[in-house]
Image 1 (cartoon, rainbow, N blue to C red):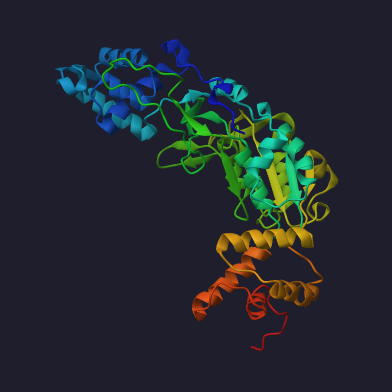
Image 2 (image 1 turned 180 degrees about the horizontal axis):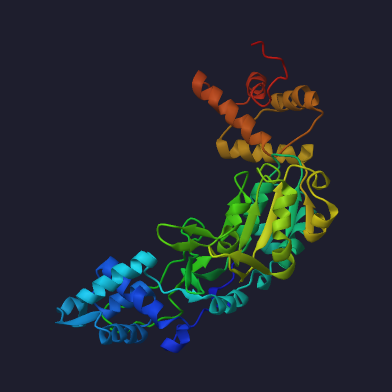
Length: 435
């Protein structure tokens, strides 16, 4: 969408320990665990590791010193800015090991859930306004029916759920990716959040694409944070799942070794898009999957549970895109369909659009076309399948012809013979196999 980052309000850096809204013991333990695991000695380096301003970091160091968990080492060399160095005392190392036995989490200080809720509101997917021009630009590489963007645009701009359905191979996945690409602004993703003393990691390099970070001036003792550095500035996230999606992937994931939680997929996608591709291919029935989303889709909040069984609310702020090759009436009841706000049918191309796609793919792959071969394809081959065209077919057929040319040492030039050989791999003949 080519929006500027400034359109999303950044999370302000905390100014005091009170702003942190975290238990002092938890923060102190994360400090000494981080120093123990990362062998950190200076306040500045510690502040970078735990994502806090130098002043607050110093306060936490002073608390740990007052409890005989840390001790000063004296002045370090000039490469460290002549900072005072600190090390764990024997009591500090013992406490670090005890704290690690309770939770292996260390590093960036978690953001309290209540504080994170406010940031979710600042960067909500529902605040994104997408124009026809922006959506067209993001999908400019696709040949689409002229009416499709008129239907798709309001659906995307609303931030509500979308169901795309239609025959396979016609670009539903590509359109979903185009929706993602249309949202060009950035949001702030917490490395971890805290609820009831439990740490839930959120930032995931597989899901989140971090923007280029501003480097601090190494000559300055006090860092100037433009935003709370417990967050990572990222592109709006996109989570794509397919046939592997199961209901337990939508729950908190507890790591019994590290004794920490990992956010479920829908929480990682907050402020972005959650694409459920190939709906109906999962082990769970589609109706059951959608039932799991009913409360989040309607109320903008989700319910998660800790190992103890305690349940709590988290924000649900994601554009959910369902994509299926089945007719909706085959896999949903009317109550479920009513809760999916937009239904968009994605049909295959007509002959004119098919030829446009074919020509574009051929040009890109340097396959020379000829009229005789195209007529052979359209008049001899497609009538055998009732002239049903699909968007994937040009790429498939041309790749097949290129493979034959490479093997036979032929120039990249379309011929009726090449068409026949490519077509033979497009479908499998329905026949009985004698065993």
